[in-house]
Amino acid sequence: MSEPILEMRRVSKSFFSIKALRDVDLTVYPGEIHALMGENGAGKSTLMKILSGAYRPDPGSEIRIDGEVVHIHGPLGGRAAGIAIIYQELSLAPNLSVAENIYLGREVSRSGLLARDAMQAAVGPILERLGADFAPSTLVASLSMGQRQLVEIARALHARSKILIMDEPTTALSAGESERLFVLIRQLRAEGLAIIYISHRMDEVYALGDRVTVLRDGTLVGALDKPQIRADTIVRMMVGRDVSSFYKKEHDPTKDSMARQSAQVLAAVDLADGGRVKGCSLTVHAGEVVGLAGLVGAGRTELAHLIIGAAQLVSGHVEIEGKPVTIRTPGEALDAGIAYLTEDRKALGLFLDMSCKDNINLAVLGRDAKFGGILDRDKARDRAKKAFSALGIRAADINVTAGGLSGGNQQKVLLSRLLAITPKILILDEPTRGVDVGAKSEIYSIIDNLAKSGTAVLVISSDLPEIIGICDRVVVMREGRIAGELTRTAAAHFSQEEIMALATGVEHVDA
Image (cartoon, rainbow, N blue to C red):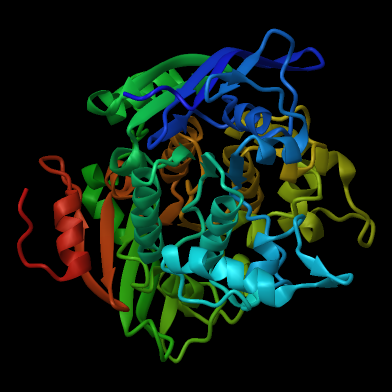
């Protein structure tokens, strides 16, 4: 193996009395995809912010690039040292062109005016090398998330970066965009670029990682070479417990099949929207967790939107406890006892600048009001404190803003809001997307406890091990229709192969 391009030694970082990192080592080689894993709060982002210049490490920390000790002061210093970072929330200016974004902070000017033609001419070959299907003059606002990722990568290449840090790069991408990104990442590795890849998705780490470094609670747990990269090993290193305890499923409604059949809570009957969804029917019973699976674009979220009134129904109807109901808006769905957890908690779910307490209480403000509309602050405070305790929300206190929490804790705050209305039916759309493995396990436990209490739960997920681990039945969609249904029994569970056979239309899938 060649000499390392990056060596971080004894890296520590304190924020007042809190020790975020303790003597962490990281070694990365040219032409390597090095996965960095750990739960939210493990120290991954802090370590990368030190490398990119956003934070200064504590005394005694050492960073070497190409064997030379470097002192990185600020993001410009990180860029000068050959380090580029692509954050989960992309840092592009949508009102500027692709070329202007790539040159941002290093613009070319002539006689005091931007030399747009020169910048576009210089950027063109880089975009062509990356296989981009848009021009340097294109406004970033008109690009898809996958195309914007390409702009970020082009900016790193244009700056002649030696080390590229990618933080959860596929969170907002479709399956097709993710596959194209993986091809590009492998191409950049073959060209000698060192890539540090941060992801919670095990399948991505298997597909891409040459080595994995795992952090837990701000310390280095260890590093794994390619042959050692296994799910059980990584999970044990990340959370300090065995993978067998990961999926929490104690409640089994199939043990009382007669009771389950007589307690149908939700029925979607021949729902269609005139476009993606074509005559879909499904049921969910009290105390049952039903999975809704299928490939991206199959119509799963669109079907959920029809159920909760977020999209217009062209045909079909919804029944609750055997009675047809008319639901025209998500507000009417709430009134009918259906709560929906959106897949995009930041844009569509949480108010990030508001406190956790206020986020939790939003759905019940009217119910709690007293004396003609005055907010009952005591009730709101008590409800938030109970939610923090019941769901294990980790934050300094209930008044911390939701935007400052980790992904897993944000998801639990949003769940707390929905549970405050005591729904009969809970629809969860990608409930653990962007959430670390520890928080995933806690959310699975919450789902299992809700089923125990009699709540009917519908889970939409692209994570097949998740569907298999927590669901009693799985309904599979393909091209806007229900392709089939599989049921867990005492004798056997459904498999990934069975689900994919229905999702793809393939009759037989080799084991």
